[in-house]
Length: 141
Image (cartoon, rainbow, N blue to C red; front, top):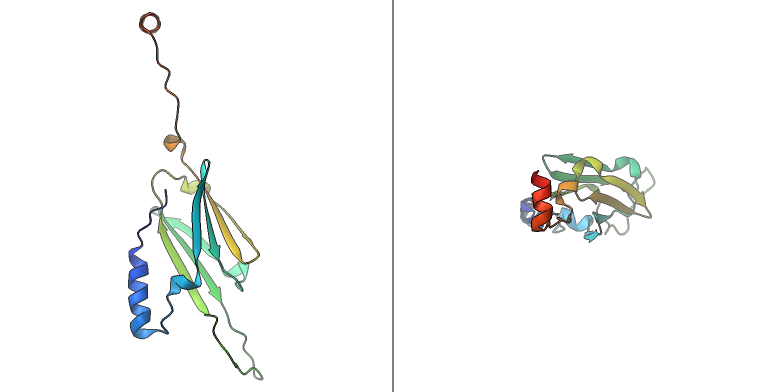
């Protein structure tokens, strides 16, 4: 399962309050996560982000998503209103050992990055056959 605690998010929030513009870096990359059968699905909102700037990495059961949103620049460009955050954004989520991090699939469509993370085989429920006394004797023989 995905772990809900994110120690980096609290540190990011405090850093932004003291040194930044008051916007949390993770606020620029909101996410939803849910289980759908034998997989977890995670959606990250990344409007205005080029697919080439998205990086998804897994190392030591930590999933890291990084993306960069750029602003329009040029000699004749003068910003009138600039409310959309720009720069490099990242989110880290700890993956539980019940997930198969080797088979994560990622897709990007309409400004949404979607990850499909399968549940590991050893974590899937299995049926245990209960043998009666006579069947147990036959198995032992």
